[in-house]
Length: 438
Image 1: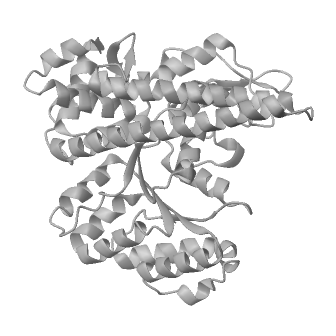
Image 2: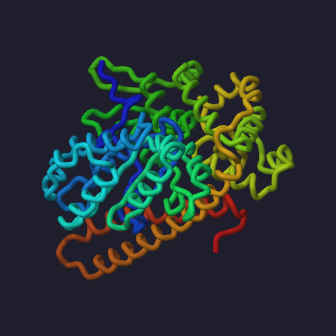
């Protein structure tokens, strides 16, 4: 029995579900440096690999290069990994006049400069996709001058860089705070990576992009969405447990039992790593809500009365964005059922963990910048969609070639995206300001 759900490795092409609006933004935004922040197993590598897949086409304005920094401890390690990544994608760059073997043994900064120039000369831009960027922390400690030069290369307006990591990378700003210019992450547009939209999550559960789809009653789909909060890894994890085959060989999902939503040792390890990456205030929020199961915002403000309401709202917004928390009927609860149960099991041990890898002040600054950038990105998306909507309406009015049905279908799709973007902008604004968006 071949189970169609993929657990524990990256996916692309038809195996990748959702993130369509994010892909459009990442490829179309004029920003040249972007930082994707996400918890473990949220799909950061798959996001980068799908970006690589989408941009590696004849009509694309980009030439993508995936650079995995995992395990690198020196600039020499990074240079070697960059060259090996270039070898894997040699055909793309040969077409731009690059003889890959000539770059063997070169420093990563030299390689990036030559790639950018060659790709620009071919009428395109280098799209640098960096995974496991936490490796830069070791470089910041040992080779700060080299890292400063790398930062300049990654923010070169002649190319685009999309960098993905956990929030631990925020330590870079502390390690580079004494730079004469500005800390490393200044200039990177921060974006949070979290759950799939409801339509994409349902499509994943039903495997709508697969050759053989899976039969799933609506009530079971709803149970899976509630238990996992549309977290792509947790959905695949749970669906993998629930999958079975009928006599005719077609797949279906049985209803989840109480045992199915208990975290195993692997999930427990992932949750522990995520907890270790929280600041002290984030841990207090998570544990306070975990003890109570569900609380109102007013109750949270009372429980943490030593903190300002504005600061608490900032961190609540960030923790919801990263999936640690969610809102149900206007109250706060833990982000998904697996995490809730793990917290209940480990509350006493977690209470005794005092050392935090990130300071509240450092991450609060990044959260405020990230929120402002999110609002700006939603507004830009709405403006782009409104322009597309007006253009399609004009096309429908003046079209006499029998294409109105197709144009109306496009118009309906744009309306759906526009509604979602406006809703996200409103929610993002209200999360932090508690007043209607004008």
